[in-house]
Image (cartoon, rainbow, N blue to C red; front, side, top):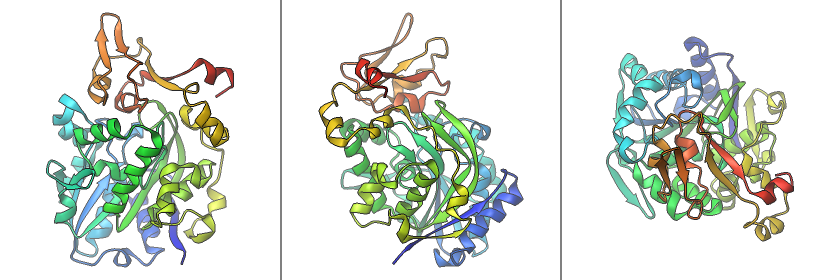
Length: 372
């Protein structure tokens, strides 16, 4: 059987237009009741990376969240909205500020739904997930379509990592720092918390060294919806101009039979996929090793390296990178941020946490020599 992905055009974040596009994307597959029973308790999980305003394009836009809320209200669901934002260390208390700055708090107040925190967890094997998954009948994921320096794409599967909140995410980065291992953990989370429905905010997407201030915004004007996160991420990969299996989370999830990655096995409703293909996305710098044959990459792993570095002139000395670092190899010196590269695992959590676009990616000499 094929998986289903629906695509709807949406030219701005104007509230009525977003609602129409989200409702159309869901209705193309039979409406909300195709995914969720009426009168259910539903947890909505947007992608809230940091305390920053919606126009920066880093978090799921609040109007997309509002639209999903309104669709579920039509079938009388009791709705809860929450995320485990990527705040670390002494910044954990800033979840309230993330909710406020992102616009999610205002939307929840205006729509009369509960905004919750992922402060209580239940262990699921290697990691704990929020107990709101136990307290609700369904999970609806609302990711942002962005590139990611570690995983290439952050979309349907990667968004679920936010169900692991606070310092536990840091521990997983530390313990599974090789990209293949980390991809496996992300797929483990997907297997444990498979959403009933995923609605992707692709109106304003991100390319380059995403998923935060290091990326570049680009207009895509798309809303995508479906229940198969593997199929959704495969469609996103095609829109980006890459092969779905180049994204390790997609490849691993498909290998485990958790969804469809073969575009021939995905039925697309609404907009035609070929009409959504434009200029290929600028990919994150570390992903350039995908151009090389895999055996060569393994042989040259010690020579082809990418590291975080700080542009000191742009650094605002907020210490977010220090708090985010799983291995605690970043410190504040007299002249600015200092990295102990001997212990750096190149997870790029520091770049993800930086609000000032000060953390950039540094290439090893060999990577520069061969043009990667």
